[in-house]
Length: 270
Image (cartoon, rainbow, N blue to C red; front, side):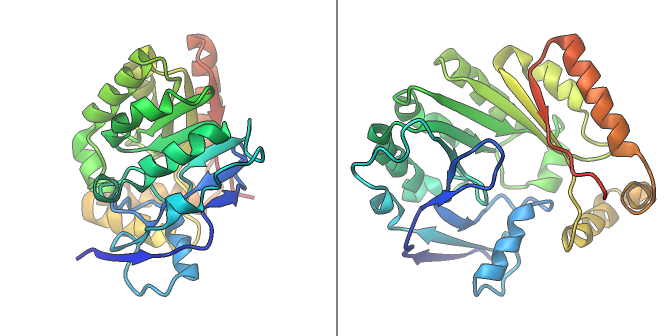
């Protein structure tokens, strides 16, 4: 059962450690999508939650009030929503924190970047269009909605994400697709590109990350749904297998041939 707690935060705009963002905004702690591969579960270190990641959400009910009224500090700086939650996960329908935050950000003139798995972002097209520099991206890990239900059960369907990309493109909003995490033998990244290139300006690629407790999450998922792949995953991650090096070169060659703009953000063993 999902535990929802309304909290008051002391700040909402945080300096970013991401390579392509200056600041991040996370209106919620936790997320309802329940993605087994979510790296943001490390956030439990900073909360008092005993629940599993995906079983709780803290709602920062005062978040919009924490955006300053007047400042030049964020003008022309990239503002990213969101890094450790989805700003449009289902609770946003009720609380509308993201919408209220966007309204407060417009006069501050940041460069806006939103990444989500939810077509709820279409609700805020009217606000997004008021940012001179803006872009919206969708995470797409698979075109198979059956697989999608395994790995991110409460996110929008794949079909709805593609339709949302098309709608954003129609409204003159630059778009991107984040293909990640790439699940070995299951994510057909070429098909994702070919199915979305008519409504996508840029692609990002990331491989499945299994450091720390994420390997146990991955192992449990494989045992439940894809036990035939368990030994292959162990080989990829716990031997000298060059699987990801080969794939990175394949992606680079494919995007070059297709004349597609892309960025590759693979985690490599050291």
